[in-house]
Picture 1 (cartoon, one colour):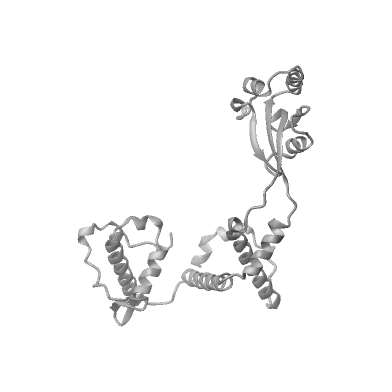
Picture 2: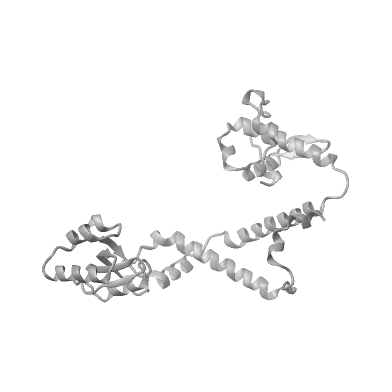
Length: 285
C-alpha cells in the first residue's frame, strides 16, 4: 500500500485514551480552515478530508474523534519529515509524483466531461432507439432432461411419445441441477444457453419435444412449454442505464477529439521485453 494511504504504525495502534481531543469545532468550517501550522506550513481541514478519502475502508470503523486526531497527527508528522528532507528526490519518487499528478488531473478532466445534467431530449431519443422502437424479442420457458448418451436420450423420447410424464422422467434420469425440479429451466432469451441448445429450443412449438441435442454437458431432451414477447421497460426503469451510456459516449467522443488534435508518437518498443515492467530494480538506478 502506498505510504500516503496509511497511518503511521504508532497512530494506527494507539488506544483511544491516548489521543488528544480535536480542536474546538468552528461554526462553519470549510476546506481552508487551518487546523495546524508546522514551521509556517498550514494543514487545513481540506488536507485532512483528502487523506481520509484515501484510507482503506477498515478505518471507517474507528470513532470519528480518534480518526480526526490520528489524521491530523499524521499530517503534522509528514510535514515535519518533508521539511527535514535534504538532497535530491529519488528517481522512483519523482516518477510516482508525475504519475499521481497525471492521474489526478485526468480524473478531474473526466469528471468535468461526464458530470452535469443530460438533456432530457437526448435521454428520450436514446430510449426510443434502444427500447421503444426496438423489435420485440422472444423468451422461452423450457425444461430438459440431461443424460450421458444419445441412446439414453432416444429411449426417453420414446417413453414420452408413449405418454410418460416429462417432469417425472427428468426427476428420475436427469443428471443436471434442474432434475429435481422436473427439468424446469424457467424463462430465458438469446445468449443465456449454449447455441446448439438455444437453437433447438427456438425451433420448437410450445408442447413439442426435441430430438436428442448434444452440448458439452451431454445429451439433452428438451420440451418447450411456453413463449412470450419481451416487454419494453418503462423509461424510469432504464433511465440510469441510459444516462451512464450517454455519459460514456460523451467521454469517448471527447477523448477521440483530443486524440485527433494531438501529436502522438509511439516509439518502437519491439526490442523491450514486456516483462521489463515488472523489474522494480530499474527504479533504483
